[in-house]
Length: 124
Ligand code: FES
Image (cartoon, rainbow, N blue to C red; front, side, top):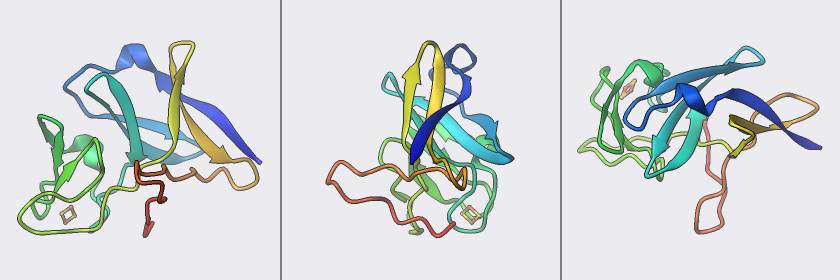
């Protein structure tokens, strides 16, 4: 069974920032992209740097460790050097809160489904 749980209030999220939400001891990266909230695990897919403390340029997050550039909207690695995509998780906004979808038995986040219908491959 899967359940949505509250991660953080939307009032904490500004249009151009990167934010960290904690749930069940796991950190999540939260950002607003073109009016939509996106959530991913807060770990760079390359070597686990917490991307909520990275730099944002437009709709991309830039990891300071090895200059990985990730499109927040798609999760894809879009820099010169390619890495695995961000591990996006399924989320929604309800009653002023960002909620993420969790497996009720394990409390692990359920990965988001890409627009093409294929689940993200997360190595984390
Ligand atoms: S840890 Fe992020 S690019 Fe290497």
